[in-house]
Amino acid sequence: MLKESIPPLRQALFNTGKRQTPTIYGHHHCGFRCRNAEETRHFYEDVLGLPLSFVVYHDKVPSTGDLRPYCHIFFELGDGSSIGFFDLFDGKATVPDPETPAWLTHFAFQIDSPEALEVMKKRLEGAGVEVIGPIDHKIFDSIYFYDPNGIRLELVYQTAAPNVMKAKGEQAHALLAKFEEMRTYYKNGGQGQGPSVS
Image (cartoon, rainbow, N blue to C red; front, side, top):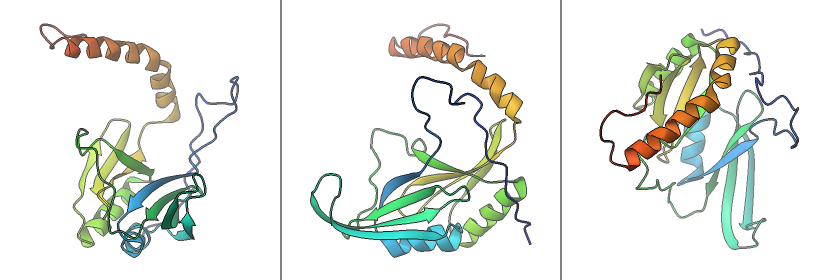
């Protein structure tokens, strides 16, 4: 049996509340379209183990007033944040942008150990879900898979210590400037020696 532990909350390394703007403290929830609320519940609650935490029905969109009946369902993560889905009762799932590669848009969840990552991989595969990985990204290990709505998901176990991530963050602006050089290089046809990003 996998020993459950509560991982320490990720500490903010740069967003320490000392800026001019109010601090955004964390993810509250995100929302996606689903083709069937019960199918989505089964995947997120029964397979991934995220409890169904809230369900709401509206026949009008509160923010716009549009007449559009929907069911909004939420699943709670271990830090109290949520992932949410809208069932518009039309059987349609999220439609990916045809101009964006299928692997690009995704939602990543944190997990607390390499053993937990392996357990989740086996659990997903046992439920008939195709899983890629674990992939070693040098600072974290990941597995990738799709939910029933075609949304790409990732489970992440961070392997790098906070001091390593802090050092990488301190280099972020300089590295981004190099990527801007790369954008120009590829926009102009990518001929000759490109800029180094090492």
